[in-house]
Image (cartoon, rainbow over all chains, first blue to last red):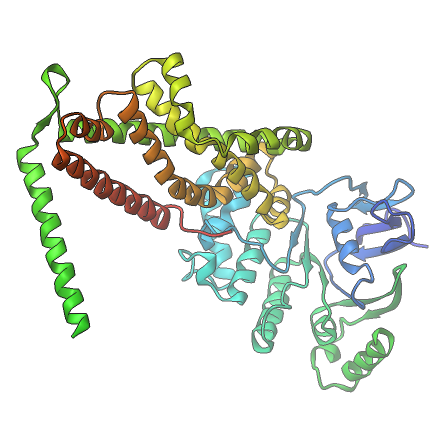
Length: 252
Length: 236
């Protein structure tokens, strides 16, 4: 068992049961898991295994039954909090706002000087490489730029955790790889805890510091792999391929 | 050859229209008898004023009603049938009642325009609110927006373009309603020109009134289209 007050844990999921009121074996049954602070954790698994439900539970968007719950930084989550920001697969951006307007959206609801906010937005746009596109509207952007805008908006309010729900699944391969590099880049700059759901094994192993493979209903952890080592950042290394095979054998 | 003919035809038609407009603008003649006589511009402005005020009030009221109804599922469920019942009643049908209640004045005309578009726009607002992607609210709430802030910064901008499109489609209905009101009740405005022509057996005046109504209606429709494209261009 994990210690209850381990400071290295961002989240502790304790006996979480989410069944959407059906009571007949929902996606999560009595599920426990710890997610460490400052790491990129990737969740893999067959569709419908509960990985997205788990991600929503980490964000407080889905609450489980009273018998368990999610501890975020040692307090129980009872709803969404600005400290844990979720990025969706689509419909992230408001079409009536420019890139800059979208990135600045969350700062409207925060304390602080306007000039300070504007500076933070400009700096964040430079970080994700969107300084030139600041005045464009979402429909004028490519899929990659749209997701970069969403990531910038999440990061500009300086949350503790970033949750990403298949953020790059709508992108083509080359764009996807560029976004993966950007994510590692952003992690190096900010050191944020990130949890990403994906169905791309390569992406999970390459981007993640830890890869969790979930099994089908009820969800349980089948593989918990530490992928911090550099050998997993090269997609042709024997270790990478071996892990990929191991995961494939479990999922398919 | 055919195209040439069509082009020439259009050109002649445009010259004719331009000529007519210039003549009206230059003379700005008065139509009517004695103290009731009004210039074309005055009639035009009277009608415009009624249509725009009526549509403006209906637009704001419909969005507020729709938003209030959407707060409670029970309210939506119980009040939507009433709206659906009232929506198909032609605005013209309200004219006698309105004249009794408000008298023969601008309020009556504005009320009729309002009745012509309000219910449709309220239903449109409810529909647009339902269409907003769930992620929009989740994102805004996640970034720290309170329910009131979410309404102002997400719901309102998300529904405005769709409701405005319906406002434009229903402009024709409002336009017709106010003209009929002017014909049967009120004694000024563009509709009154037609009635004046009828009463004086002056067919040319009737035709003239029809042309002015057609042209101004067309221009307003284009104006609304332009506003929609320039100011409320996004699609959710």
